[in-house]
Length: 489
Ligand code: NAD
Image (cartoon, rainbow, N blue to C red; front, side):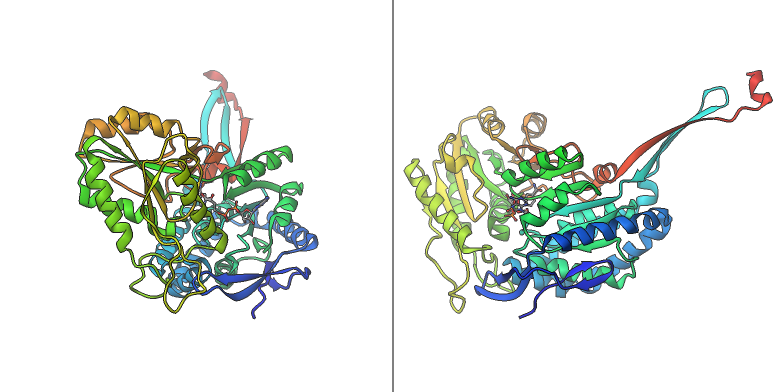
C-alpha cells in the first residue's frame, strides 16, 4: 500500500516517523493508503526551509508570483476529474460534490491572481508641506493552515493561494483522515515550478499542529475544524504571539414560512441537509417551520429524505455518499436515541441500513426527527451527519429568537416570498452567513466566509479582502522631501 510522503523544500520526502495510519475509503471500509504521523524533526524542517525561502519569495515581484497561480489553476482544471475521484474515495462524498468543491477551490486561486491590485496600499501627498504618507502591505513570513476532513481540496485552497500570492511561504497540515487530495494538489503545485520552500505539505496529527503553534518562525495560523479544537488553536496560537483565524463547527437553522415555494424549499433544504451526508459546516441541520408551513414542509422533506439514493460516490445514480467513519455513524445513531429520550419523534429512520455490495462501508441513511425541543442536546449539539430535525413555532419573531439563542453562528437561512420578512431576518439573525431562499450560503471567493459566535475565533475570516489583510502586515511610511519651491506654500 502506498505510504504518503511530505512535500518539503520542493521535494517529496518520506517522514522520519514510524507511526503510520490507514487512510480508509468510507464506502468500502478498506485502506487505500497509509499516512505518516510526522515527527518533530519533519515539522521543524518544513518550518526552517519555509523560513529560508521567505526572503527570496517576498522579493519576487507580485506579478511574477501570480504566474505560478495561473499555471496552478490550469493544472487543477486539467486534473479535476482525477482529483475529484481521490476526494470521493477518501472522503465518501459523491463525485458531483467532489467536482463542486474543487470548483469552489479554483475560484480562490482565480481571486488570488488579483493580488497586484488586492494588496495595494493607500497614500496621501502633502500631509504637511513636502511631506507624504504611505501605507504599504508586506507579507508576514511563514504561515500555516490546519484543515478538516470534509473538504479536502477546497479548504486548503481557501488559504494557500492568497498566502503565497501575497509573498508568504506556506505549510499545510491536512486532516490525517483525507491526506490524498492534498498530496495530489501538491503534485500539481510541484509542476508549476514554484521555487523550493514556498509551499510545504506536512502530514500528521495534533502533535504536528502543536509544533506549528509553538514555533517562533510561524507568524500566522489558519484553522478550520470543530469548535473545541478551534478554541484551542485560537488561544494557543495567540499565546505564542501569532495572528490566528480559527473557523469552528456549526448547527445551522433554516426558517420555513407558510408563503415559501414549498417545492423549491424542500428541494434546496433537502440538498443542504443531506448533501455530503450532512458533513458540511453549512448544512441545514434544523428547520423551524412557522404556522401553516408545518404540515406541507414536514411531509415533503420526509418524503425527500426517504427517497434519496445512498451509495458509493463514484456511482452516477448515488445522491448521498458514506459518512467518514464508523464513529460518525454511531454518533448519529446515538443522537436518535438521545433525541427520543428528549421527546422528539423519528419520522424517517436511517439507522441500521446498508448498501448492497458495500456492506463494509460506513452508511448512515437520511434521518428526520420531529418536535425537537429548543433546549434539548439534539437541538444544540453539532452532529455532523445526515440527521435533520424539525421545530415548529407560530411567528417569525419566535423563529429568529430560536436562531439567536444558538451558541453557533455559522449560517442561518430563511425561505419566504415576503420581502419584509426577508429584510427583518437579514437584519436580526445572529449568524455570519445568511441564506434567503438559499440552503448553502457559501460565500464566493471574493467575500469573507463570515462565521460568528462559537463558529469562529478571530477577526479576519478566510477568503476575500479578509484573506489579503490576514496574510499581510501594514507598514506606514511618513517622508519629507522638501525643496525651496515647496516652502512658498
Ligand atoms: P477536527 O477539529 O477534528 O480536525 C481538524 C484539524 O485539526 C485536523 O487537521 C486535525 O488533525 C487537527 N486536530 C484535531 N484535534 C486537534 C487537537 N486537539 N489539537 C490540534 N489539532 C487538532 O475537525 P474534523 O472532524 O476534521 O472536521 C469537521 C469539523 O470541521 C466540523 O465541526 C465542521 O463544522 C468543521 N468545519 C467548519 C468549517 C467552517 O468554515 N466553519 C468548514 C468545514 C468544517
